[in-house]
Image (tube, rainbow, N blue to C red; front, side, top):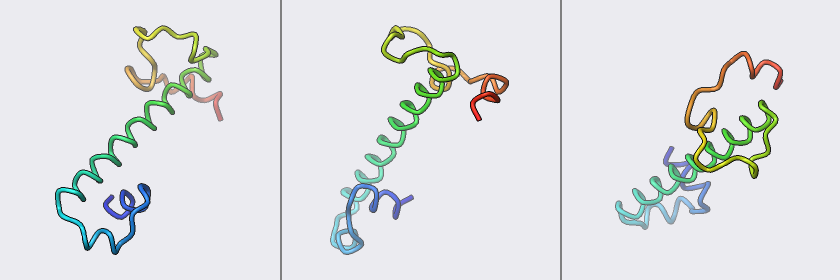
Length: 80
């Protein structure tokens, strides 16, 4: 995970060895935050595709399948 975090955020190995521990830790936490955002966006896209809803038309307060509640496996069969 450390190597992935460093390369994803555009840092080199040289930078890693010259950095303080707290900076490296914050880098890992930033990578985790970006991964969570990416997963939520992917869940919204999949849920919208499966049920035929446009993401812009969804209300903010509604639960989104894949993000707020599990997606029914039967509905995903037609996705592939």
